[in-house]
Length: 176
Image: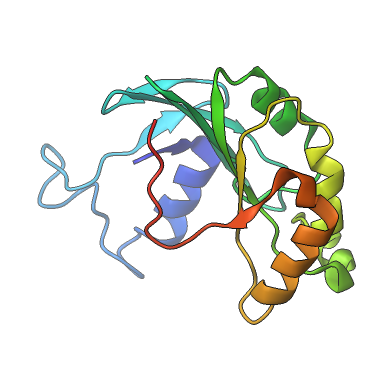
């Protein structure tokens, strides 16, 4: 498992701690564990299955990152949980052959206050953020709150329609 130090520390302390779940880094034994943690720093690229993955900064209430993924046919950026984030747009605008942007929009506009407080986006904030983008990737929306998805997507279409954003679907495959 790859992640930033803060995230891996949280997983060790609160999840894989022998109280909630077994510590899979110790079973079946420490020499051949089922799970291995690989600590990464923001901006540090690692290769996996012919693709390059780079953690990019997120602006969230807890330690979080997004990811830039590059392959032979282009790039994809996943924002992770984030709010207004200049570092994200620097990564988006620097990505070679950016084909896809997957970005969160968690709350409808009527809940902009909670979106701001919890460091997420609402459709109007998304539209303001997308104005910072010089690339023209396909845009997919993720992290829609249950019961509010249809409303949020209508508002995304109204506020950010020129980018033709679509809802990210389960089992969607992106070719890079």
